[in-house]
Structures are given as C-alpha cells and as structure tokens.
Length: 108
Image (cartoon, rainbow, N blue to C red):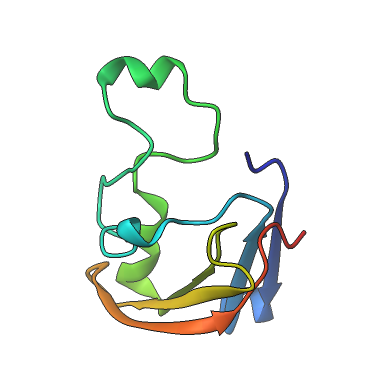
C-alpha cells in the first residue's frame, strides 16, 4: 500500500504538477476508466467504504484535473516491471494514448 506521496510544482503549477507515490501501480484493466468521474477500482460493495486504507477512491481528483489540464499517468506493477505504461487522457477523462515505458514500481 502506498504510504508516501511527493508533489513537485513548477512555476506555481502553470507549467507542471508532478505527483509520485510508492504504491503498487495501476493494473492495465483499469487504464480506460482511471480518469472518469466517480470511477474507482477500490470498491466492490458499499461496506468497503469502512475498510478502505488507501488514498483517494472516488474518482474526483483525476477527472477534475483532466477538465483543466493535460494529464499523463506513468505507472508500473510488480507483474510488468521493468516496463510500465505512459497513459495520456483527454479533457473528458478518456484514455487517448497508451505507450510502453521503462518504469520500476515504488519509486520513492
């Protein structure tokens, strides 16, 4: 589970905001819906709300960012390392491109 998040802001966020964590990565079956409003892969039943132990789960942050900025996600999992994926999303949170990229898991 992720327990460290690093945020780097360039030119007060006008040029870029880079967020890195030491989580386990995003599974490829979640790439398409990742930035859609109110989407989550972390809940299967309403009762799961009481047991969630990770950061963010309601699909608000990435969806909101897509509506005002260019969003690129780079991720890898234990199953895909040393390769990962670079994902680019449009203003509606739809996946517009996916490219392979060298990437390790738990970078921080």
